[in-house]
Image (cartoon, rainbow, N blue to C red; front, side, top):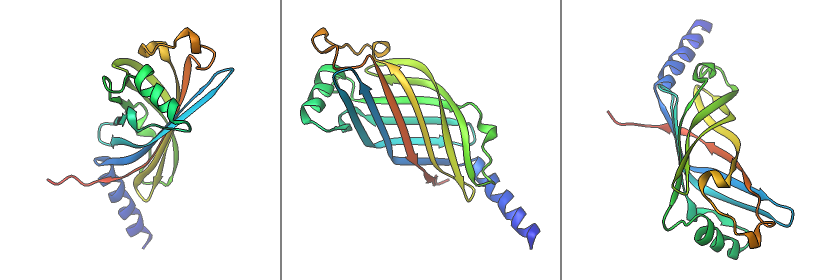
Length: 185
């Protein structure tokens, strides 16, 4: 009986290795903490895919989908800073650098390093971030990461008049609950 369980787990792991996992409800939250004001916003409709055969990872989020505590912040964010009518989405295309350290046949939370290109405001920059991937029953169930970016790197300008209200860096938190992407042959 034990051998059957081991063989079943190995088969599940082999199947999952070539599979893709996705989410259309990924959550991206950012925080800008300056001396005079803390600005936070979140978007719970980010799309993401992880390809376990290649380790490729992609994210996409619509800029106008970010929700703020104050509607005026959202308006300024979209019109003055992110120019969301001109640059409607942000994307990340990268790779799990340590794909081989994720054991799909063993439940647990695995530390990962992701590197790739983050495009915001029409500007693409290389980024590397640490995160975790959770595996349950032979499948990726969730992933989390955090990174800090400099607004100037993405040509997002802060007017001097509000320079004390907006931090020059932004902390970005990323979270997604994944499900298997069934691809028809």
